[in-house]
Amino acid sequence: MDVDNTFNIQFTIIFIYLFYVNLDLCDLMKVDRIKNNPLKLAKKILHDLKASENMGLLRCVQCGMCTSSCPGAKNSGYNPRDMVKRVLEGDESIINDEEIWNCFYCYTCHSVCPVGNSPSEVNQILRQTAIDKGIVKDKVGPFAVYGDSFLDIGIGAIPKSFFMELNEDIEGWLDLKSELEEIRGELGLGPITIPNESIKEVNTLLKKVGFNKRIEKMK
Amino acid sequence: MKIIPDKNILLFKSCLVSTEYPGIESSTKYIFDQLGVEYIIDHEQSCCSGLGYYSDVFDQTSTTLIAARNFYVTKKNNAKNIAVMCATCYAINKKSVKLLNKNNEFRERINNVFEESSMKEMKYEKGSLNPTDNIFHVVEIFFNKKKEISKHVKIDLSNFKIATHHACHYCKVHYEDTIEGFRNPRMLDELVESLGVKTIDWYNTKINTCGAGFRQRFANKPISMKVTGDKLLELNEQNVDILIHMCPNCQMQFDRYQPYLSKELGVDFNIFHLNITQLIALAIGGDPYKTVGIQTHTFSIEPLIKRISEDTI
Image 1 (tube, rainbow over the protein chains, first blue to last red):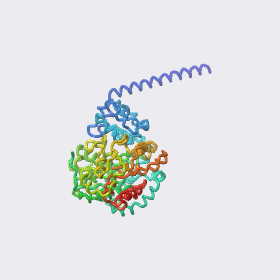
Image 2 (cartoon, rainbow over the protein chains, first blue to last red):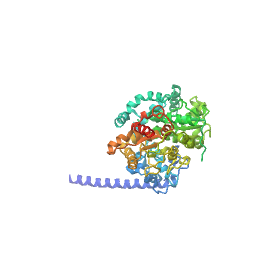
Image 3 (cartoon, one colour):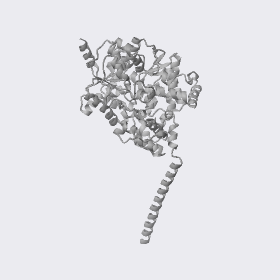
Image 4 (cartoon, rainbow over the protein chains, first blue to last red):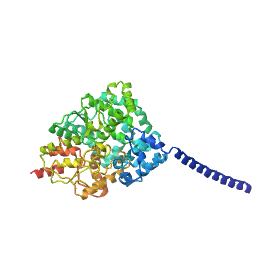
């Protein structure tokens, strides 16, 4: 029994040792990989269609104007300066970071940046990357039905799952929806909806670029 | 300064204007008619997809494909210019024109989709629209005609304390095209001044976002409401009567949630929220219900109308 126990303890020690050595090795390999190609993530972002032409991502001087003017940073753990720093270090874990979901897309950072960078667009592209990886269904799932309504009627509608809360927060909001056509008539305005032929065109085009599949993957 | 058109305009329909504040559309038409601005509306034009784009649902290709179809609708009407009533329609359409003009490979891809869908007439021709010279917010068209607007004013609004909220997606996204500044935007202030009222002009939270933040209003309500509340608190301290908007999403955030925030924060907010198109229409004689469309507002505009008629008597 004693011999067995001793063996077990020794084995455990060796195992822990190897585990840490391995971790160290992993860390070293990681650092090495970053050193070899630190700008892979930044370049991917710069080539994304959502990035503005000549976006100054690589010119970032970490001045912090973005964070100091950011409504997300003021009210949550989101920090656009740090997000950009991690992108420039090639730290891909930023894609999984919950905090990137607190950006308002108000573009204040984009408009004040002294080197023409756009943390707002960097954020949008990181979120798209997370969506493509299929790791943020909890974040985008509730909004995916917006895409369904676009395919069905050519207009995006506020997802029905939010209707009840909106109606609770805003007195008479759903009543207004039921009176809308009548009010538009009083104002001399045409229909809200687009003609069936146009809906068909929009639907065909979006399906051609796989938009319907994209929506299904989000759910 | 860029040349702002007053004809060959497609008035671009907006989903939030149509369903939340249709009075913005009827007011715009009313002002355009009074000023002799020539425009058309085409119901074949689809929604810009902006709410989906900024909720991360729409990718760039899908959004630009929709935009290119709408550019075809514009061209089919022999219109050269697009005028939008929503700041997000402005940002989305400008971005798509820029991409289609500059990125040859991407434009080819979009045009191939049209070709393969038997809609080759919709193909986008490089340079057929210019992002700076052909895509406008209706407010820019009004701004260009502010001297003329002054001549049409029938109602004195000078007893009201007015502040402005310049929409982020007009001012900050394509800031190189923004007229009258984006760090201290004054476009709306000058327009209000043309109606005979001096605004409060700068205030600390003037360029702060409305707080809607697309997904944030729905998925992250506490921080969304905090941002909206901060601005309302400052305006309330300054005893502002009316906050002027230029985007239906901002207007929704402030008007729809003001009563909610009054309860949440225990502060009695009594600020009227009007779009600049609604304020101008009202000032030049538009009917509050048949033109301005005050019946779709959550924080009632009726006390404001009552004050105006009392002042007039």
